[in-house]
Amino acid sequence: MEKIPRVNYTTEFKLAAVQLVEAGRKPAEVCRELGVIEQTLHNWLKAHREGRLGHHQVKALTPDQMELSRLRAEVARLKMEAEILKKAAVGSTGQGNILSTLALGVGNGANGTTWTITTPEERIVAPMEGWSDTH
Image (cartoon, rainbow, N blue to C red):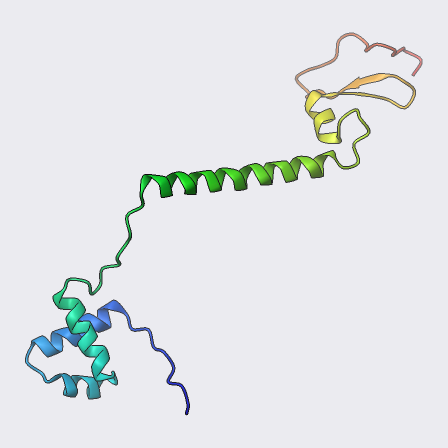
């Protein structure tokens, strides 16, 4: 036996079918015309009478459920932050990674000199420690 595929009808289609029946047409006639199973149309008629057709029923959340949802979101955020920090620390030499070095704007050169990252507006006036004119 072959299974009949499930069809999802739009709310507008359901309401139009219900209106045809309410206008005086026979349900069997409307079903043949629209290609809908009679039981499906009867379900739509019942839902319409009960005020459920076209209205999505949303369950109200209790304060406990809202708090649980908030805590789960916070745990997910903290796990993500911890993962980012773990990845940033990989390859660190104890002096911090490149991002923390750049954020501070200072570093050490290969020959022991100190350097600073500046913007064009922040000109260095005095030489840094360990820097001489001969370099």
